[in-house]
Image 1 (cartoon, rainbow, N blue to C red):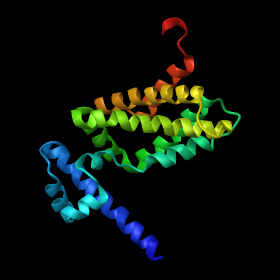
Image 2 (cartoon, one colour):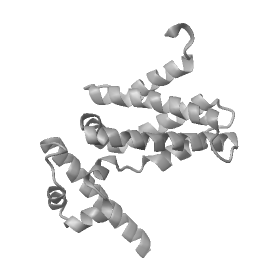
Image 3 (cartoon, rainbow, N blue to C red):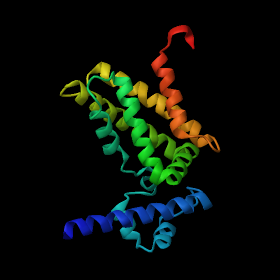
Length: 195
C-alpha cells in the first residue's frame, strides 16, 4: 500500500514538472527556459527536478507510451499479417494516448521538431521505438528475438509513423489517427507503380 502511494506520488510529481516545463517552453522557448524556472513553477526543488529527470531535454522526451504500444502489438490476433496487426495496435494506442495527452503530445512533438538539440536526440529515441516494434513483432511470430525481416518491418512502420506525426505537428487541425491511417495505407499498397 505504501509502495503504491509512493509510486503514485512520484508519478504526480513527474507529471507536474513536465506540465509546467511544457508551458514554459511554449511561452519562452526551450533554450530560454532554465531548470530552476521549471522547478519553481512546479513547486519543487532543483534536486527534486533532477531526481525525476536527468536533464532538461528528458522532460520533453519522457512518456509512458512504449510499454502500452508494445503490449498492444504483441497481443494482436496471430492470424493477422504483421502490418495489419501493427497498424491496428498502434491506432488503438494512439486513441488511448490522444484521449488523455493530446495537447502535451502536440507540444512535445513541436518542440522536438523545432529544437535542433532535441531533434538529434530524437533520432536515438527512434531506434529504441524501432526495436520495441521489432520485439513485439518477434513475440507475435514466436521468435525469441527480432530477426532481420522483423527489424525491417519495424523500421518501415516507424518511418510511416514519423511522417504522420510530423504532418500532424505541422498542421492546425489535422487528425493524427487519420494521418496515421493514410500513412499505413501507403505501406499496405507497397511500392508497386512508383506511387
